[in-house]
Length: 123
Image 1 (cartoon, rainbow, N blue to C red):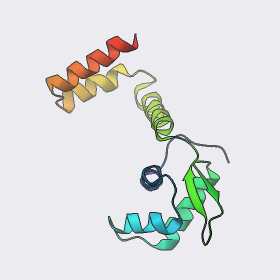
Image 2: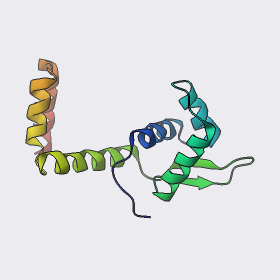
Image 3: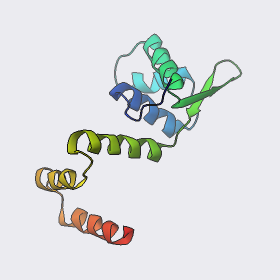
Image 4: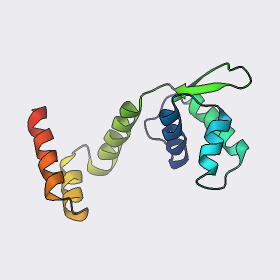
């Protein structure tokens, strides 16, 4: 199955847990999700299998259960998702996104200075 860069909300939630834990069983992910909201164990199992098929997770045999770890680093996945969003919503231009963030999110002067410094350093 071809890897898609955009994850669903539920897939991303699971990936964040796996990235945080480094390695996890279905039970580990299920218990982490259960602390946030009610969810069925079978739903978590299904979502993990989908993430494995999409090549976001890889599994190895554990002593009693499969152990999963991220197949792609978090920064790579986030970068792909942001780029896909910019392409889809802003026709590939990041400038309108930044303008939107500045106008609607009320970034502090400190935030704007930090962004300007990063832009200067990247050139």
